[in-house]
Length: 129
Image 1 (tube, one colour):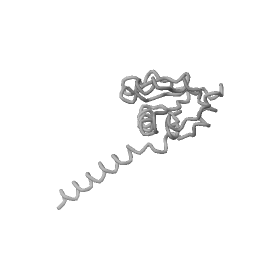
Image 2 (cartoon, rainbow, N blue to C red):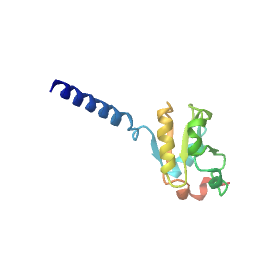
Image 3 (cartoon, rainbow, N blue to C red):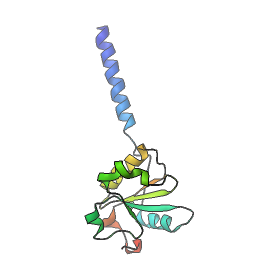
Image 4 (cartoon, one colour):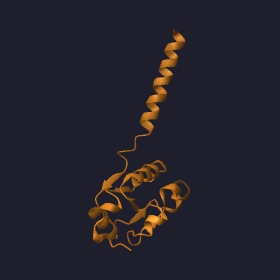
């Protein structure tokens, strides 16, 4: 019985640490396109757009001046992103940008902003290229 109790406590601890360690939902901020555009124009905010869509998607249009690092390459290329700037992460609809934002937070980035709604929700004022 003593072994069973120790085993049960060990399982609870492992599960507790696993669930607590994977919850980064509160560590990045989701911003509207309007707020993201405002941040990108503000010299003091030092913000850059990061497009995590594929090159094929980007070829159909993106935000002028954005850096393209597809989600599939983010683990190999995240060091290209500066830690001292606000990173405005977007994709097509918001799912991949959330995954990229979670990953960047796990790598120690603290200025990560997920742009709500992805490229599909971007207004004309985003200055597409």
